[in-house]
Every structure is written in C-alpha cells, then in structure tokens.
Amino acid sequence: MTATLGVLGGGQLGNYFVLAAKNMGYQTAVLDPDPHAPAGVNADIHIVAPFDDLDALNQLASLCSAVTVEFENPPVTALEHLAQHVIVRPSASAVAIAQHRRAEKQFCQSIGLSVAPYEVLETQDDAARITSNGVTQTHLDPLSTPLIMKTSRNGYDGKGQQIVQHLSDTMEHWNSLGNVPCIVEQKIALDAEFSVIIARGEDGEIALFNPTQNVHVGGILDISTAPAQLDAQLWEEGQLAATNIAEKLDYVGVLAVEFFVSRNKLFVNELAPRPHNSGHWTLDAARTSQFEQQVRALVGKPLGDTSMTCSAVAMVNLLGDRWTHGEPRYELAVSQTSAHVHLYGKKTARPGRKMGHLTFTSDTVDAAANNAVSLRTAITR
Image (tube, rainbow, N blue to C red; front, top):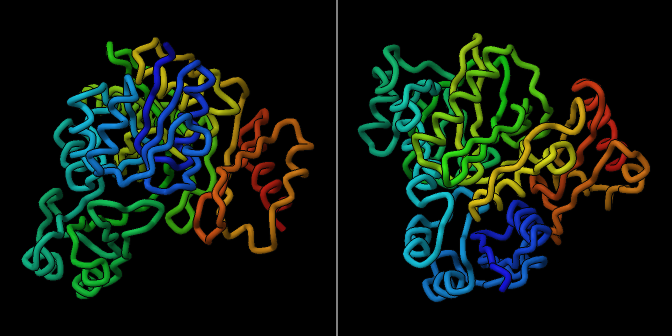
C-alpha cells in the first residue's frame, strides 16, 4: 500500500512538497483552512479546517505515516498532538524556537553564534528601559537608533515590523503593533545577506546547498543568486553555523538559516523550519530540490545530491504588484531555454503577495541576475 505523507499548511511551499512527494510515489494529504490553498489542489486529500482543529488533526494522523510543515507558525500544540500518533518532522520543540524571535535569538547565543544586539519588549517596564536608552541584555553598549521593532511571532515578509528612528517613539510604535511581545533590534550596517539551506536526516546525515545571496526590497525577498559571492571564510562560517544549529536542535528536515554580514562578521538573522523562498532555485539548478530533500528527510531516506547543475542561477520573485497591467506575458520567458517560470496557483493578485517566481541559469552570477531581472521586467510591463 502506498504511504501517505501529510503537510500542515497549503501554500506554495506545501504545494512543491506535495508535487515532490507524488513524483517519488507517495500519496499526500494537506491540512489548511483555505479551500483554495495551492497545495490542496494537487494533494490527494485536502482537509479544510483550522490548524488547531483536533478532529482534523486526528484525521490527518490516521491517514499519514509522517507529517511535516510548510510554514513556521503552526500551533506547536498541534504538532505535539500529531506527534502522539504519527512521525512529525521537524519536531514541535524545534519549530517552537524557530517561530519565536526571542527564543530563536537566545538559542543562537546559547550555542555561541552572534545575533544583532537587541532588547526584549514585552512589558511597560521594558518600553521604559528602551526609551531611556538603558544597557541591553545582550550587548555591553546601549542601543542606538535606528532600531527595528519586530513582533516575536507571526512576522514575515516585513510584516509585524516598525522602524524606530527615535527612542522616544518606542511606545508609539509598540502601540501600533498591538503591544504584543516584540524584540527591538539594532539596525546594523549590512554588507550582504545570505542564506544556507540545510537538510538533516534522522541518522544525523547533513546535506548543504550552496549558500544563496539575497536582496530584499520592502522586507520581501526580491532576488536570490547562487552560489553566493562571499569571502570563502564567511561561506564556511555560514555552513558551520547552520550545521551547528541543526545538530543542537536535533533537527530532522529542511532548515533555512538567514545571515547578515556586517564588517566581515556573521550574524544569524532568522531560522525557517522548512524549505525557503531563497531555495527555490534548487528546483531548476540543483540535482535534488529542497522539496525532494524535505520528502527524503521526512521518510528516512538518504539525502540527495545538493550539487548545482549549472555554474550560476538567479531567482526573482513575482509579486502581485506586477499584475497591475494584466497577466504577465509568460510566452517571453518560455521562449528562453535558460528561463523557468513558476506560478503558485493563487487566484487573486495583491500588492506584496508572492504569485510566483522566475529563475534564470547562466555561466556567471552577474549574467544570471541581470537576465532574470530584465526578463521579469519584460514579461510584466
């Protein structure tokens, strides 16, 4: 009998997991409250229910031999409940750390990794201390503006963030975020941003994709290029840090670790306990995609070959803003053998919404990036 694999979440990451699993001979089940969720369209079974619905979770567990996640904010209690009945990878404890910015930073510091200086903002006393420029809990020097206030939970693509230009504005910005628990982080001078996508198997096997250099616009990833154009020491430090994180979390699955580079020093920015937007290039330019790797880790198979199939690749996001003048002219991309267009099957285009992405392979990173950006402009004019 064919095994069924489950995924909590039905967005584009879940959809690529479903497609990878089906290509490997598995049936699939998705739990997502959106009846139009992209992954639900291609899955064998789509359970339309809230993520914390016990009946739905029990149904998913009864159908599946193993379950994973496609976003970082599923209820941890839901994962804990599933784990009583079925294999869940990554674990609820690992996801709990990755989905909470304070816990994430404290964990990284506890294993000897650097993060940007920050303050915890959870109470009125915290706000008063930050406003008065008190000494931070994580750095010897007082914070200096500009700062970035980030909600501890549920922030992504620039959401749940405020730039604090003056310490006296701390309370105003916190009020605008609903006075939920936050961290207030020093805005450091960035030389580069990059991510490492790592997979870890149940036996501790590690597989690393080439580090990917990233550029964000308005808090949303705009372009990723691989291999990252970094000093060899930073490249190695990033891979060692990602490996350290995965091992210390006893992580099983695919994990994305985002890094800042400032004055030739590495800082961990965020962890994502699932495949990542910056790893989409692996669909077209790696021998094993990050989604096939996710399936392999989930079912306990040996991890796949992460080597690139070309010299360089660039990925650009297609946001809903680019639908302003109508449907993009995909035929311009299809006519180029080095280009690949991926659409996520979302019915409504909205500004800032990820509708798809475009990849372009080439002999050099600069050529791949320039061609990808130019092609995106051409098809969305």
